[in-house]
Image (cartoon, rainbow, N blue to C red):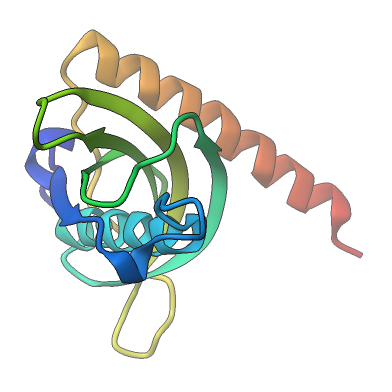
Length: 158
């Protein structure tokens, strides 16, 4: 199975924040943003695995700054770690004011997906070929989290 680099499976997605996307404060609704994050992350995981994928967990989602009506939201999803059948995806969200060009990182999310075969059973995924120091650091961080989760599952089974 041929490995892939994080760059090969990276997905960048953009959306314009429309009136149906905002709350009473005219900010992008958190649920709508979560929907977009899941889509971007799933596309990156699918691109890496070359198979149907399912969301296993959203490990982390932080809201740092609102995205307002009429602004553009840019989501970048990148695989940072793979196990045997799972893929850890980091998503960075940037809000951009199209009139001023001002851009700000508004959100970060970490999700886990599993690749599925034709019988909807977990199936093996290609290895991740990390290259840069930043990619290696993200890989090690995600690997530690994955190992912690594996250990917790071992100790909680009866």
